Figure 1 (cartoon, protein in one colour):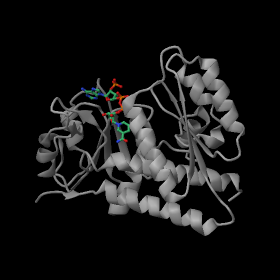
Figure 2 (cartoon, rainbow, N blue to C red):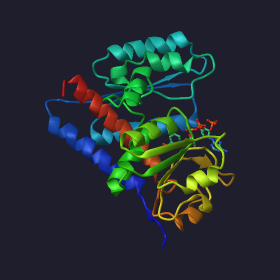
Figure 3 (cartoon, helix red, strand yellow):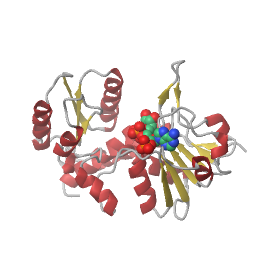
Length: 283
Ligand code: NDP
């Protein structure tokens, strides 16, 4: 039987509705604020930031964007972040990656106040995630958990296999699943017998960055397959890291690309910004 499709667009919409209603319910002029910082004119980043602005408006989050020239110095970016750290209208600061070579990404990410680090990239928040105490968690892995929960997939005791160990997706996804009592295997380019390892997965998360890398025979019968990959094919279409048509025949649940994990990332960013504003308010 073909797998049920997990509709990321719909779940993201539900998350946004929850954020909107929480903001309205809080009342009293409560207005979370998000600032996005871009260095250089990358068209894809500009589209992403434009989408964020529209979504912010729709849920009642105040937003600002700063576009610095591509030859901006590290000092310029640090100065802007310092100002945003002190701005009480702003509860979330997002620095669009990648940054140009003259700028140290780590120094910039660690300059963002941990209390406004809605992307969860500051080392304080990374440490909190490892220790499983409240802090900001990167938006894409948070979106994966939200999708599993909304779909009613029980995580506890399951074998979760994640392919890809990046700091923004694979590693935090592994920690979140571990904290939810999955048995976790984190794979990467040196993993041996990857096919066999993937076939053991009750929950298979693909975050590799290679179109159709996960083939049908890597999917266990009835598994839940979460495809994080976003790859542009030669024909201009988007494709995930999973061979969807083949995997769908074996999986129990599967996320499509587009319309799966992608929309969840921005929704969770809005949710983190709300959380930040509530924490700032002492809630
Ligand atoms: P990275 O390039 O940072 O990491 C890729 C990972 O895949 C690495 O850990 C790498 O292993 C592993 N890998 C590469 N080749 C193989 C292989 N042959 N076998 C096993 N593992 C392999 O990618 P990201 O985590 O940033 O992104 C992954 C994908 O997710 C991309 O397509 C990206 O566009 C997408 N993405 C989507 C988001 C969304 O909102 N939906 C958000 C973020 C990313 P090693 O560490 O050994 O090199």
